[in-house]
Amino acid sequence: MVPVAEARRDLRAAHGRRATSTFAALFFAALALRPQIVGAGPLIPAIQMDFGSSHAVVGLLGTIPVLCMGLFAPLAAYLAARIGTRQAMALGLTLIGSFGIIRALGPGAWAVVLLTLPVGIGMGIGNALAPIAVKERFASRPATGTGVYTTGIQCGSAASAALAVPLAGVLGGWRGALIALSVVACGSLVAWVYLTRGEEPHDRPAAVGIPRLPWASGTAWLLVAIFALMGGAYYGLNAWLPDAYGERGWSDSRAGLLLAVMNMAAIASSFIVPWLSDRQDRRRTWLLLMNVLFFSGAVGLVTVPAFAFGWAALAGISQGGMFALVMTVPLDLEDRPERLGALVAMMLGGGYTLAALAPFALGAIRDATNSFDAVLWVAAGLIAAQFFALFALPHSSRASD
Image (cartoon, rainbow, N blue to C red):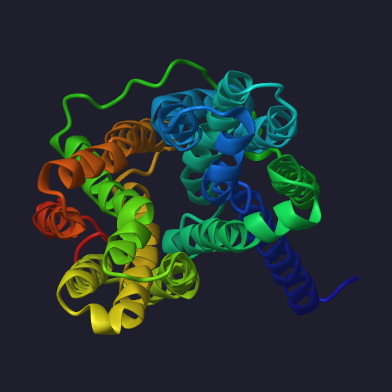
């Protein structure tokens, strides 16, 4: 007979291998959740030149996926209840990879734009499923699990931003670059399916129904506001920061590098900060600290441009940590997966939908004021408003001190 102590060691080792495999699966799945937006951005001038289309039309390549991440977040909660998070995530990654390839082969500008819709739906499904998957598998350390997949998101964003144009040069243009990004998404699908094989308890729900969003919950609306303010500042800075410094006389390459620094700086903090918050059990302290640092970085970018790269790094570090923590808050507030799914769906649905308007609204501010300084000040104002929303969050075992 196997000694009890040895059997327990074997059991712990098996659990450790399963946890490592699931962490890896979340990371690889998350790699595919942003490149179709971030990587497409640097390719837009080439796409526009190829088709001779307007700025408004090609601008939809960035707007549609963000809107889809909002509008289709409730669908993710339904699919999680209907077929389980494992199969639902596989469906989302399939849409991203397969339609990403098909989109790259579109014969005209409107075909490429319309084929962005299923890509965006897949991104919306995968993005909203990730917190549910963490709650099911890592209920005792939710921020650590969240940090794993948000790190994957940041890595995918930074890599696609840096590699999109070089890939286009090597692979014969923007079509080749988009196909390459989509093939990577297909690889994420294979990794997710392989690394989560053998999982089953979360794929057999007792009851299925359309999740009832918590419309009457003040906390849910507070989370919508927090996510919208954070997302509005982030997408606004991503859209206009290079132009703001181009207006100050910077070259296109140097201004683009500033944005790359901000995104790359977010990679490490998106894992380290939530990991620390899990160990110290002081979620609110970390949320407020990241908010203050994000605000400081945004203000520094307006007022002290001589240290722009330092301010961009500070903004990136704090935004990466804050995004991971905000995605963790619903896990602190809800224990039941179906209620968690509904809360996440509402937070992401409303938050992403409102955040998608930020680049357009900030662009309108630039047209009205004839200066990007006003744009950067408004972005900083959104971050300042988020501080008060974070402070109003209700107490929970981890969301507060």
